[in-house]
Image (cartoon, rainbow, N blue to C red; front, side, top):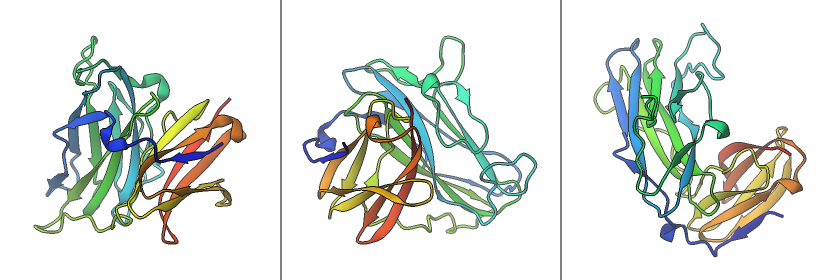
Length: 251
């Protein structure tokens, strides 16, 4: 059963803390890698095991996604937990999640590898602004996800490094965690005026519609309600679809 509940007040729940996250990276060069990086701290009183999901907010006209080696267009990747994922990867792997003890902050691990978030953007000759959102989600239930958007501006003149894609009426969805769904997974939401969440198959057919009460809360996904496979969940506000994210169900 999918349940939407207002019993969980997310603003009062401890969550991961981003330490000095980068808002924008600017470069005159169209051929050099652009890097944004920051630490993540566990300010809770419990162990947190964190995954990262990269979401596309806006891109330059020619973006090499899905990534194909040798193709034209800008491309990107991120590193987390000491692992740099292949170009175009959207999510870190559960098996390589980073565990932080209470009061811990990401840093160098025992092998000397960098464990903080490193986001690399390669303009590859493309001028313009690309925005990527990075969401940090705990595998533990009841912990809200924390997301941050970075603008990568290559060859942009003064005042051109801006986000051109509007947010959907301040309503937002967090990243589902754990993902893939094996038992119970949760996704946090914020919807000041209320909204709907739609669960769809990959053809766009709606499988479930869940009303979201005004305010903040969580929706829980039970793997037993779905056949193994890949699905989408989407936020709809006043009849308009905003965020769309992918999740999978495994047995």
